[in-house]
Length: 200
Image (cartoon, rainbow, N blue to C red):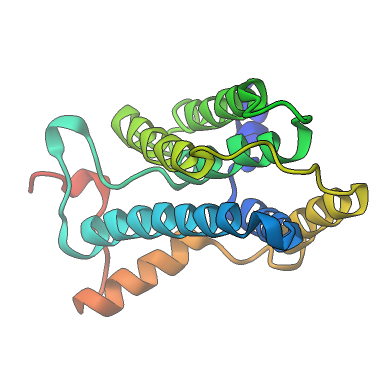
């Protein structure tokens, strides 16, 4: 069962999500420039707030002991800002704002967020905050948009290949390690705060 949770958790890896989203963003036609801009901003804001919350704890110990909160779950946040919009964008037909696929993407993101609990990567508050942030950003992306033209098959294949290639090529790259190094650099500490430091 643990292998299943690990597999599900890996679907929320930013090394897979960001390249896939980038291809879809670039493939949107000029007529969808407003949608492209909203989604790009939503992804950037979600990633920025997530990283900021992690830096705050790792570098300066800013967390919430009562909630066992040490920073927003990146897997939950990024999954919920990418998958709902990506499925809505690639699978919806000509119907205006077909929310069935948005809901499907949200459920997938929720499952990915939940998977972080049994593998003990995050607390409940960290997962919930990540899902809330990402889903709020996804809702802002859709706004009053009509369903755009579905991307061509070759675009979908390229998005999938990019998403698979980056983790394979950069297998040693861990965003968590990068954030830890940044926290030490910015705070001037030789080591980062850990969960057991909450409230100390």
